[in-house]
Length: 125
Image 1 (cartoon, rainbow, N blue to C red):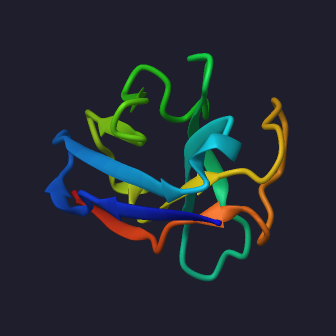
Image 2: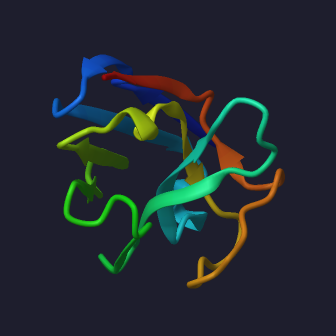
Image 3: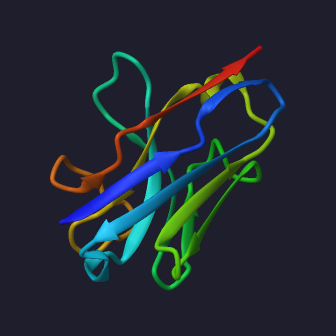
């Protein structure tokens, strides 16, 4: 089992910045990628924000490219999401994710993946 603990959400004005952190513990040797997804109220699907593989390959949603940066610290078993130039439409609950099995481009996360508890990001206009 893998446990993911997030921190760093909050309220910020449009144009501001936030940094999310996620630390993994447990059977972390099984993890080959970590990422962030977000889910708006009333929506059942969590959309990809950014992901980084154990080899350092990154993928971003088009809506956040150039504004968000994902990074990882393999010593601390942590992944970070630096969010700059935040917009009101970035308001969501952000979830840290580690897939069960191999991550691949286009993979749809499922309930069997490892998930953090979620952290609220609110961007005011």
